Length: 343
Image 1 (cartoon, helix red, strand yellow):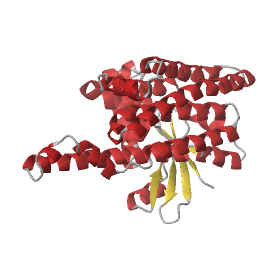
Image 2 (tube, one colour; image 1 turned 135 degrees about the vertical axis):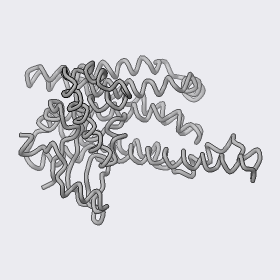
Image 3 (tube, helix red, strand yellow; image 1 turned 180 degrees about the vertical axis):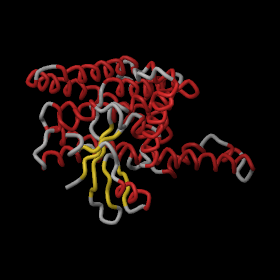
Image 4 (cartoon, helix red, strand yellow; image 1 turned 60 degrees about the vertical axis):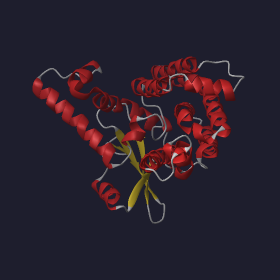
């Protein structure tokens, strides 16, 4: 089925179109720049765990890859294995979606195996910890009814990711009922993360950095919920959730642009203390760089949310099951992406 419908490689014509600027990748879709027509749909796969291992490992990449389950026993095999993963990373970079695929937001509908989701959850949890208590203090200030600890909520998210993956081994009816239940459970986490992010963003414009891991957690939970509903055969419900969550994301961050972010960064800098000085100029340049990067991340996260339902609608129009699409992604161990071309 993969060879006939879900391609493991991006066709040369599409790659050329992306390089020339005629096509671009918007969230999980490849589209024509001139008219917005969709050329294909992207879905991340379980093979991303290998790419993430290589990216995170540095000089010890072969050891990390072996520990991740890649059976490479001889030196030449190690070279071959590393080369294949590097090629996968090159594909992600060429499509300009490496950060999306390896980061929290993901592309397509998230149901790619527990190994990948675990890495994503751990990465966002670490982002929370790096804030060194500041996020907790802000949440205490702006959300005094907070009772759950963030770390506990990430534990619940990890547990649900593992449970969603485990249900693939169940019979069809039992799995479908379980995935429907999982979707309800994830909804509670999705609401929690979105609510906390919204309170931070509504309270002060300069809290977008602290809100980032909460936005990422919301994006992950949303993808898991949509994936669970799609796996349960509830396509229309999955589509509606995707649309509602895309609107929630847009409401939270759509109004925030690079200029807003730059102003927030400059509030306590030499730009205010000594306008016209060299230090002020350096502060302005640094704030502008950070602001552009952060704004790009916001727009990318919004694009992912806006396109989550697109592959599901395309599958339904062709009389295909979302479970086939997501099952192929879960079973794929070599290609980091699957492509379904638009008809």
